Image (cartoon, rainbow, N blue to C red; front, side, top):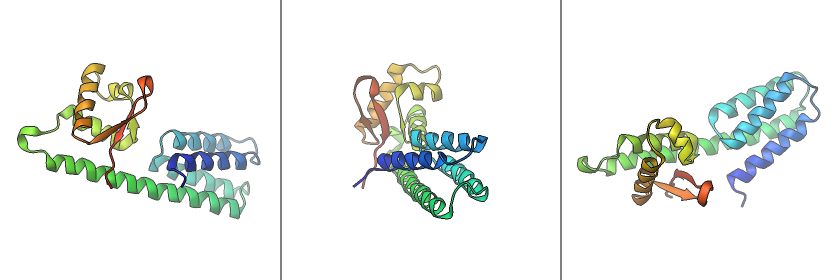
Length: 170
């Protein structure tokens, strides 16, 4: 079974193939940029925007109905999957808040980290430094280690390629 990232890569490739037949137009560039933005960080806002761009291309006659329906259908499936993941992330964050008693609460930094991960799906330490200015990498890593220890996030990768994500429990 294909994972979500492979599907997004194939969808982005399909959009690029369709764009070969578009005239040189700012809309063509915007569609490419938005497809790449979705590939980098899938989110509802970008999916809605690319759907509107594709609708304009269809109205201009640059995209036939069959291709339009296929591409839009795939982006809508992606949006449903994103919604499902976001709901599970919200549930995970809520369960953490409920499971912790008063003497064992998440720190404000840890809460910010979880909220950032919920919005962006994944992050490296340097991404978190933007949201937590004046906090050292070492402190952020300690907070991440604590969140790992209590099972709220997971770590993927090695060395400089380590990425943290909300742990999804099934």
